[in-house]
Image (cartoon, rainbow, N blue to C red):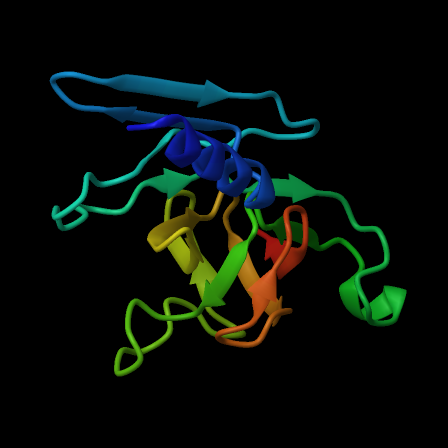
Length: 157
């Protein structure tokens, strides 16, 4: 890997809000890491040229309180928000022909996959950190999302 390739990788790393990235082969090892205020993102391994990516990494989500999330306070009172841990493209299903992971009214459990966020051609499964009923899904399928953007409103059980 040459200096220009490393610089491009570092730019993509910062642009996509990643906190840690590690690339390695038998002759080369590169690890980039930075702290992100308010949360963390698990390590994302990029495939080497010519390789097919394996299973997607799972990213923790940030769950926060009940600040205003776009509806009247009485409708969303007592709900938890699940926010995006990275910048990318939001997908409700594993592929275009599949059923969505969750729909409004579904009960979700800790560790259950809620959606996928694609970042740098890597499909990152976003898991629920709480148990409850999905009340609202904020982004549309295929929509770009930012770090910290609201994805779901969940009524805790």
